[in-house]
Every structure is written in C-alpha cells, then in structure tokens.
Image (cartoon, rainbow, N blue to C red; front, side):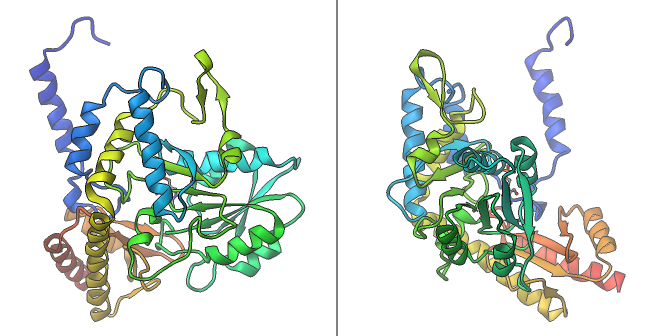
Amino acid sequence: MDEYGVVEGELLESLRHVREKEAPFNRVFSSMCTRPHPLAVRVHQKFIETNMGDNRLFPGTKDLEDRVIAMLASLLGTQNAFGYITTGGTESNIQALRVARDLSSKKNPNVIVPASAHFSFEKAARILGLEIKKASLDKCYRVDITSVENLIDENTIALVGIAGTTEYGQIDPIEQLSEIALSEDLFLHVDAAFGGLVIPFLERDYKFDFTLDGVSSITVDPHKMGASTIPSGGLLFRCREHMDQLMISAYQEEKQHSLTGTRSGASVAATYAVFKHLGRRGYKRIVDRCMKLTNITEKRALSLDINPVIKPVINIIALQIQNLDEVLSKLEKRNWYVSKTIKPKALRLIMMPHITEGILGEFLDDLEEVIGYVR
Ligand code: PLP
C-alpha cells in the first residue's frame, strides 16, 4: 500500500480504464451470468453495508432472505422449504453434500454424480473427504440410470442429478433418480444452479423439483438466470432437520447455517427486488426470449450443416464444428467471447438475457464467414 492516498477522480479514472479492458456483455456467449437487472443494481447499492452474518443488526434484510427462500420454494414445487442465500452454486453444492455426509454414519462415504456434473462437486469431495463416483451418460448426455444403480454400494450416501448441465444444458431423469433415492433411502441433491430459473418457465413440463418426493435439496442461483447481482446463490432443503445439520451457534445466541460468516445482504435484497419486480410473468418473458434465440441459432446451424450435440433443452446450444480450435480463435479475434465443450468437442453458446436478436445475427454472420474460411 502507498504511503499517501490517491485523489478520488484520478483513481476512478484509472478504474474506468480497467473496466474498459473487460468483456462487454453484448459480445459474451460464454457466461452463465448476465448483466444484473438495473433494479437489482440499485437495491444492491442501497443495502451495500448489510451483513447476513449479523442478523441482530440487520433483521430486515434477514426477513428479505426468508422471503426469497419462500419465493424459490414455491417456484420449486413446495410451500415449505428451508434454506439460505449462498455465494453461488459451488457453496450450495458443497453444503448440500456436507448435510448428506453428516446425516450418515458411513466411514468411507461416496456420492454418485453424473459424468456431466460441474467441477464444484470435485471441490466438495476434497473438502468433505467424500469419494465421487461418476455415472455414465446416455446418448442424449443425461445420466444413465442403470449406471447409477450399478454404482450404488453400502457406502453410498447420496445421489446427485443435474437440471441444466453446464456443457449441454441437459436435464437428468430426476424422476427416476427420485425413485431410486426413495427405495435405497439415499439423499438426493439436484443441481439446478442454472436450470432452476429456466425450467419452470419452459413450455414443456420437466419434473425436477420438490414435487418429487425423493428430492432432498436443490441448488438454484439467482445470479445466473435470475438476473440478480453476484453473489446470489440459493440452497433449499425439503426438511428443516437437514438444513439444521449445518447449524453453528455464533455469538449472542445467534445461529448460522452458511459456510461463510460475513456475507452480503446487498445481493439478498437485490434478489428480493428483482423477483418481486419481474414475477413469474417477467421471468417467463425472459426465458421465452432466450429460447427464441436458441432456436434461431439451431435453425441457422442446421442450414449450414452443423449439428448441435443435443437438441437444445434450455438456452444452451453446443455446435459440432470442424476445426473448432481454429474457429474459436478466429471468433476471439473478432472479439466474441465463446467457449467449447470437451466430450464431445463443440462450440458452446449460452443465450443469456443480455443477447439480443441483432447481436446474435451479427455473431451468426461472423460464425458463417469464419467457418467458410476454415473449411
Ligand atoms: N452447478 C452448475 C450446473 C453450474 O453450471 C455452475 C456454474 O456454472 C455451478 C454449479 C457453480 O456455480 P458458481 O460458479 O455460482 O459457484
């Protein structure tokens, strides 16, 4: 740290330059986050000093958190769920598996996750001392139920299903996982970090939430398709006793369930505001738009003889393109931010709310041109 402070104007100017070097969201197809809703930003600022780690000082913000959890619960098929606003999908997945571990008395516990699971489960496994067993996928990149059944042994404590996989946006057969969880008496965690605020608004009805009796907990992130500010993750449990496995007594008779101590109340209030402001209708409009962009992309790709890895289920499309690395680097030179999937290799495009039809058209024209050069 310097001895003397820098004047505000100079500092802000230098920070403006820092931001200028960063990606403008309207060129970004690689992120599962988006520009937060303007109201979320305003409310975030108003609640900037609130700390959910100290409910005695901020009882109002704590009340907003309870209301956000109630809104998420009702969206996910129950009037009664227990949870809190986490820092994101990673914390939620770690905490869910922590509960599963602590509920069991197994000495060498293992958890069965789909091969498509997000890497946060690897982090969870290392932190919690769990073995992760990866179930294979079917030809549509959903978890293969026979593979899950074959992996279950006397040390299995939990199953994980994904509702909106990170790479292809696929939804696992959660209904079948739920039946297995019930018959084998296993904890079932559903990672709907991305899909949880998309799937309820799709035309097609997918069963993935607490309406299935075997689902014990769900991850759902408002800082992804919820258009709230970072850090806004969500973790919900069906049973209070499960949530209470996380409970620690803090000072002054306070109790904490969260992994972090001091945590942002600003993003909690922002999430509350954007949920109340948009309502189900507002989110449906957003999801409809993102799905329309996904369909436009699929049609254009097919017209160029490019197939998606799977027919898009949510607003993620992965295109099987020859000479992918060359195409990616040419797109990057044109300042597009895109990403690739690994198995199979494909160009992954996430149609977030910040993408417009105009931007998409520009991108698809560039993609067509670049593919033409590379062929
Ligand atoms: N789960 C899924 C399915 C995800 O796609 C992601 C992130 O992309 C996560 C969990 C982790 O979320 P976060 O980055 O908010 O910790």
